[in-house]
Length: 352
Image (tube, rainbow, N blue to C red; front, side, top):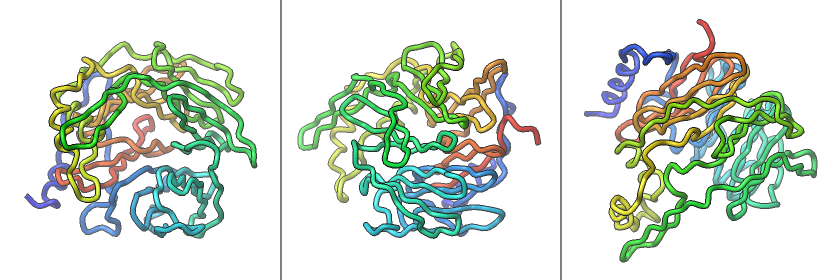
């Protein structure tokens, strides 16, 4: 079957899917970006972010940035080591009408305006930055060191610590004759996670507690959101998804990790259930979305907010949520050939 035919089948499935499970809100898709024959052919999408109804998508290749606004689309971002160029872009966020991009190899934050014009860059010299976020008007960067993580707020030349935590020490060591060895975090182990909040604070789960803490800009707890007690089983597709995501397919064109992959299927032990939280995302209108399952059978998210009933959504299989906006949400979809597209849905908490 051709790629267009497979994509059409996947789109038809999303439209004709049955009624959602009890307590689950059905998603309504409004557009698809990066479909065959369109103006953009996505490759290795890294991130996406909304500003109103405008959506910027970051991909690994060149051009790296793709802005979709008011029926128009523009792309920019050359590959290289110059001031305006990128080599390994990982995050993209909106800061007002400007777009900030974190480049992990160049250790910098590059800034562009809506037209794609380069505005400037800021070096990230202290520690290895692994994440870039906006909390209100504040720029937050997560720094990595051994097992410790530090979230800092950038203010001019200052770096103020917002949060400090230890990642889980659980790892698995994979080795096979004639292949490089790998040491990886244990699959689906409970890990501390956080997300920025629109007002400048953050939401944080320690990896152990039965609730998510909401912290203001000073680090004081303002609320605790109890987590659902429902736990979802880790199934065979979830295990295969972990192998695919964690073990490299090739290095410099050589499939040197195939012996490791085959041995890992008999050596790696998976938990019976996913942890209570895999990821957190703030909603622009308030509250926090909690990821409860992986993408193999369709990511399950639940929205928690003080004084409001929980709202649940489930994405189609092989889709991963990228961004929550005020009016829409965006998910990365991969077909059977691993071709990528962006599926945009109406926001599940907003009435048509």
